[in-house]
Image 1 (cartoon, rainbow, N blue to C red):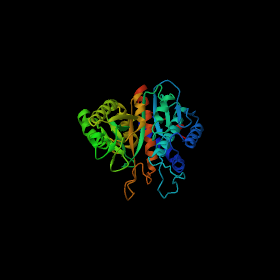
Image 2: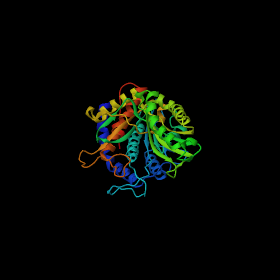
Image 3: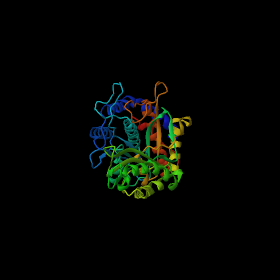
Image 4: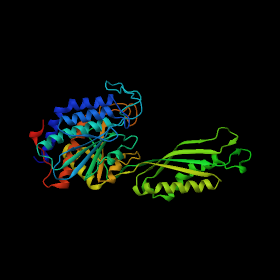
Length: 412
């Protein structure tokens, strides 16, 4: 069958599996697990994948899965879902509220996971019928929120031989049924910086006999953001924001130690790589003017996620086929971090936004990383349609002419 038949086959598949998929998502929501502790989640996924004849393998650290569908010649397309929860309290009054104190799926990872599971079940049926023109690799990744899970997947060989990779992320700013796409930077690098100043302290009556660290630190936290605007291309979307400042213990004592900590976010890969050296030089130049010694600790988090143009077009073609042209729109850049970026250092790919807001809901927007966050569960079917169609479109793009093909006899 040609691609025009795929939406109908997915409709039939989702009708048969809707109750199972909703139940699976709610079960994950009730039993959230934090980064690198996703043992129950990993076990449930492995069991269901084995039921359809697949052979998932657990990552070396004990959570997360890699699972290939298809073993014939042809390209390999990877699809990724993150499986970890957040360390916060679920504040919703719903039957599937988290049963784990201090842990909640408040970023939609339970939806991402369920979508990828459904995608795997559908594609496994296609593979058994000989209708899969290549290999699809499912990456159920732990510890996106830490982050670090993507690096573990790569270390375990998850990106070996992969031609393209795709992922979805829930977006409560978009209505369910909508998909947001963007070429280029879609999420930012997110790093941490700590500046520690030291020097001789003393009495506030005699600042000239000391290194006035409070004053020096004040200069650093106010002058660095402005100085960066003249050292880094403004198109890079570079942002330095301080979150903690600590110095002194008494109003009449100049301390001998002072600390400031903040986050560095950036939408440009070149600027991200240059940031540590630039920041260190600026800090030292300001500190030296006041006789202070400066120690800069710069912790890498994640690179910026840069969507590759052709991969975005593949997703656009797939979304148009699966959902209709009216469902496909653009999405703005975000300064949030997303470790999907690590995969894009090994293969071209794209991350899309999946609408989760219900038009029937009243009240404030259910934003990410809040205890009140929830989704319109129709997003599970929307995401499955998009991921299946994206995988098949990409396989034919990379390896064979003739358009997307499905086998209706294989759909059980």
